[in-house]
Image 1 (cartoon, rainbow over the protein chains, first blue to last red):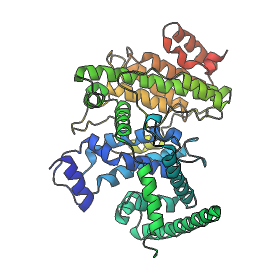
Image 2: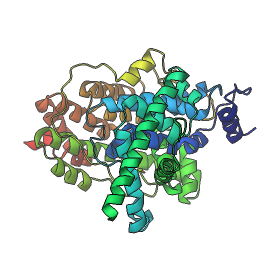
Image 3: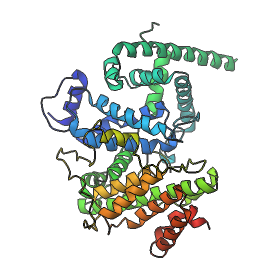
Length: 194
Length: 262
């Protein structure tokens, strides 16, 4: 069984892996880099310090990878580390995005999409960030992990170290807040069209 | 719509942003190379070989060499940015000035890029460096020490074999090759500059004890000088900066710092 299969297996079943080999760091990186970047952004890490925060997460992942036993998914394992590192990162002055649009730095010019597409996509990102900003920290974290990163409530409960019912309650509240925000955006868009 | 699921409109919004915030293959490569440099295993060849493949370079040895160079420039680059941020932030309080200065101090482009997911880091200091006399480690470090984060002190290679632990502090440890541990140690020192300059100075001292003949000696000295600036020890910083100026072009990194200001 190669590493990808092991990761997939652990991810799907959450069962303990019988083998004791350590997952390949490159594959863990590739499997989780988008998740870690988005998680950091949606938790409020400033675009300016995003590189540093992501790098720090993976340095710790690298250090701890040998302790991964496959009892949880690799995403939960990396997510647990990301949470600790990013909490620490956000406690430091200046690392938190203070209301500025997230992920504005975008792609380097050579890879940037055409301006119309970029504008449309950035508007969606702005909306999402604004809606996340309306939530409490606890609700936002659960919403990001469950709805954006598609983790199960069991995985999120494990990652956050709280009861699964608590996760469901927070998620329910977060969804209400999000839907209300989507309705507001839709209404505003209609007003502007007239 | 029930409380248990989002509307189609909400799900579409999320899917759209999720796709937007997904790295391209090139960004993925840059991220991996940057993390590899941070971990400091470039010298071991693990990341060097992969980066060589990504860059189309031939030969692991050549790649290793270029990545070691990249490592060095990455450290210098980081220091340059920090220098601009710390120095100008502390004394001029001019965010835009610091940004321009830091940008002008970007390291040169090398064959193996010093990668970044985003454009060059813009200094974000708007006030003076926090002056701390405590050498208490950051929370993550504290957790490592408390055993909450296992496998703490040295990186473990992906292969699963434990890499050598950091050697016990000794002045007899003499090395001229840039090892993984020393790059990581210097990286941690640099990372601590803003939040805890006393800890940064302590890490730089440890680096000096372990690697007295390091190729990164100039970079280490820059960290020490900036840490002294952060601690308000301007005269000490100035004295060391003058000494460094006489023997290293890395002085450029100190432009705008308290040591260079007079």
